[in-house]
Amino acid sequence: MPKAIILSLIIAMLLYVAATLVLTGMQNYKDIDPKAGFASAFNGVGLPVIATIISVFAVLSILTVMLTFLLGVTRVWFSMSRDGLLPGWFAKTDRHGTPQRVTWIAGVASALLAGVFPIKAVADLTNIGILAAFVVVCFSVIVFRYKKPDAPRTFRLPLMPVIPAFGVLASAFLMFQLHWETWLRFVVWLVIGLIIYFGYGRKHSLMNPDSPRHEEAVEMHRPLA
Image 1 (tube, rainbow, N blue to C red):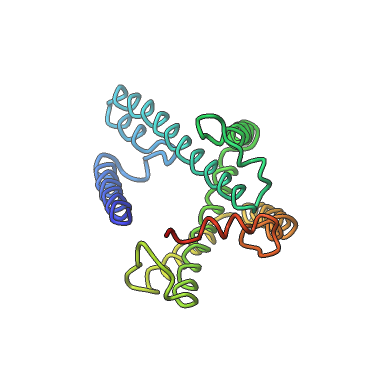
Image 2 (image 1 turned 90 degrees about the vertical axis):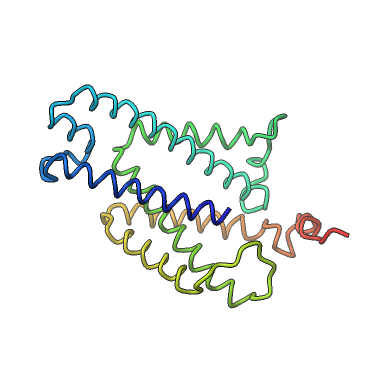
C-alpha cells in the first residue's frame, strides 16, 4: 500500500507538470484564466469544441473527487464513533454494513454548505482542515517513533524524521498562505471539536480505562492464540 501511494503521487506529479508545460506552451500564462486554465487555453487557440469537452470532463472529475472525500469523511466519522470518541449512534450500520446515518448527514451537510456559502470559502476551510490533519499526522509519526520504538508496525517510514518533518513544514507553509478569515473559521471549528472531545470523547473513548466500553478495546487488541 505505501509503495502504491508513493507511485501514484509520482505519476500524478509528472502528469501535472507535463500538462502545465503544454498549457504554457499553447498560450502566454498571463492570458490563461486561472478558473478554467485548459478550457481558456484551447479557446484562445481557436478550438472551442475541445474546450467544451474539457469543461464537461472537469465537472465529472470534480464529482468523483467529491464522492471520494465523502467516502473518507463517513468512514472516519464511523470509526471515531465506533471507538467511543463520538456517540455510538453514528456507528450504526444497515444490513449491508454501510454507515448509512453518517453518510446521509455528511451528504446533506455538504450540499447545504456548497449551496449556501461561497464556494471559495468552503474550499479554503476544507483545505486548512486537511492541511492541519497532515501536520498532526506527520508530527504524531515522529512522536510515536521515539515514544514507542518497539511497537509493531506493518510499514516503517524511511528517512526518519526528515520526511515527516518536511511534511509538517510544507503543510504549515500552505496553511499560512490562506486568508485570515479562513484561519478565524478554522479556530472556531477547532474549538468546537476540542469541546466535543474533552466533553464526550475523552471520557467515552475505548482507550480510557474508566470507560464502560474499555473491555471492548481489550478484546479488540487481544492477540490471537
